[in-house]
Image (tube, rainbow, N blue to C red; front, side, top):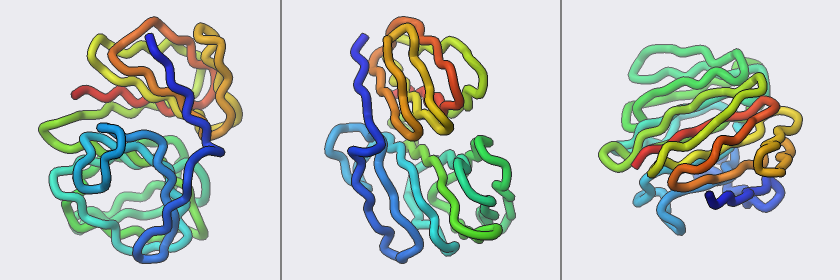
Length: 185
């Protein structure tokens, strides 16, 4: 099992074209892929103001509120309130989507997968639990609150740090609030 530690302090903030916030990429596949050719992409975004989401053809998304009072997404004309932190919300990335902030800036966790190339399951571990990636899957664990210990790997993650495990591996024990993303290609 190969574990790659991805520290939050090493991520570059990329401003959005509409000026509404910045994104920090946590991980993507294949390495070096851009916004038009990734199979999957995971990021954290600082949302400073509401506005339309960029449309991504053939992309499925899961967004999770991490910090802030929340937001209301209007996806294909239907409103969805994301006001409770750490509750993943899945939606197609190629439909018209607009965001209205509830009462100020927010931070969200974003998982995007290209249909036909990858799928993702996003779970929140808010109590100690074991996690494992099946053979051939990729597992990404991102600390969303406080610190997260991966005792079986001898690692401790600070807030927004992550570990990436490719092609299955040994059982890990996650202690602390974390997003557990299982990606199948």
